[in-house]
Length: 117
Image (cartoon, rainbow, N blue to C red; front, top):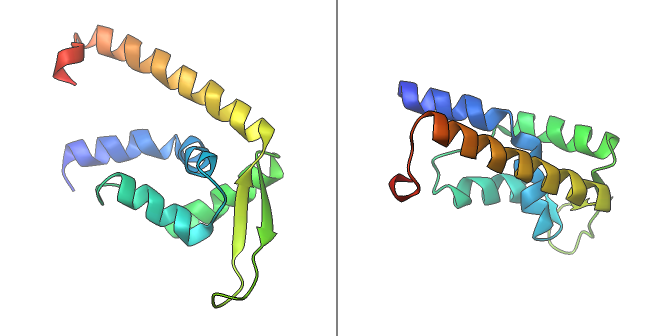
């Protein structure tokens, strides 16, 4: 892992909740399915450890941002599915707005032009 990769991973780590909520905005999903969606969306460049994700699911559920339910066993073992709540959608929107504002400020401070991104 390069220094750039480590820096990017540190930045992303602080946004795990928002990333998971973003995946769940597309529809209900079980734990490993969320992991794969994150990995696949980045072309394999970023993975969140499963242990981190499961701690995130528990925290989001405790905070009322997601709900969980057990799927049926028709396709193998029982899977615990997660769905985003209205409160989760509101938090997601707020976090994205905060990220967009922060990115705009950092880009301005670093003199990053839109065409360079």
